Image 1 (cartoon, one colour):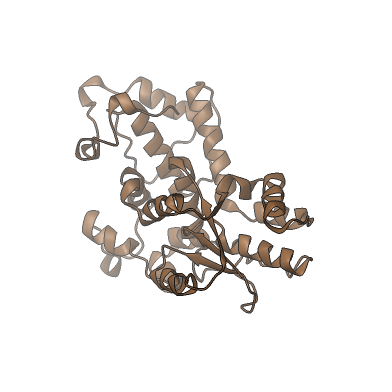
Image 2 (cartoon, rainbow, N blue to C red):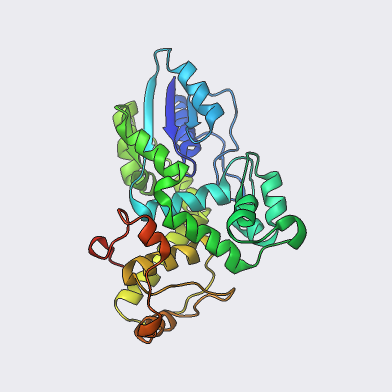
Length: 305
């Protein structure tokens, strides 16, 4: 038996599926739900995956670890990959079978009911954003965006960030998130583990094709690159988490220019370029969170976009 430790959103169930395929020396039934997660698997397989952000799963692993098994970890690094796993577990986590972000943007209360584990978005909105879902209904898009913007500004306090650091410190064999994205790299890693080769390219193609967070990631990277090069491209079809991440990157970059918007996001990179170029100097002021968390956010410790 092999145990896989991972944080929410980093594809522990997909890797478990591939481990089972290698043990069976064949491609098993495709595990993907409509939203692209790999949760549609038989429960009687020998390999196990533990989301260590889930206390019940972590407790179960600690009992299992007393038995001699091989342990593996999925690790990721940096803010960009944090943005990716955040999308993944919001969109595809727990008991969700269809697109979670889309549902959240339309019906947050129902999203929290069907997710399958405790979700506290509405309680945070009530505490920090003066919005009560019980009495006011569905939050506006800018309120949801600002919720995720806060998540980025406090990324170092987020459970997936902390648990990923725990995984990095473990001595178990490591598989990196970027390897899972790349078929050739993933196949090489699995060969090292199993000493055999299995052709699962068509499964991996489905994994990427159904992976909305991965597509959003590369769309966002294209947008940020265009801003850096001062090139104009259209901005469309971003989810609220992607919009929030772009604003976070911009605010870290320009430091004293606030990027708080209404429900409508920028329509093009030219809109962003002009927003920065012509922002009034007398209104420039660093984000209060930059002062509060000055060890993480300083002008001299800035990020390129």
